[in-house]
Amino acid sequence: MKNNSELQIDVQNAIKWKPLLNAAEIGVTAKDGIVSLTSSVSSWHKKEEAGRIAWNTLGIWRVNNDLALDHRYF
Image (tube, rainbow, N blue to C red; front, side):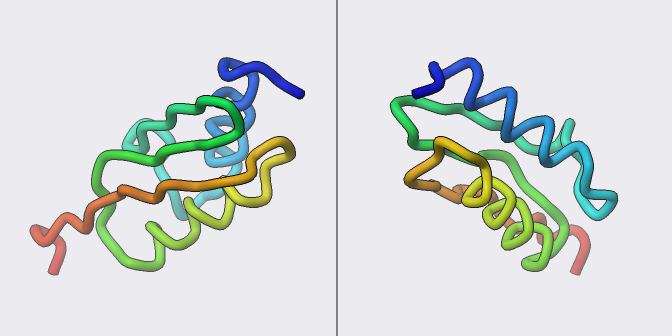
């Protein structure tokens, strides 16, 4: 099993490859296979996409998608 730092880096790197998302806007923490996404994004689609990316990362068994929608964009 990967350690927490490796899981965090894997999720961050996967997010970087998605042109829809700005990796600098999304906070990622990992502990014992659980990843938490924090901060805010401009659309529901971005929130869901970040969650999907985290779920598809090898070694992750739970995702807490705590990304908030930034209503300044609506």
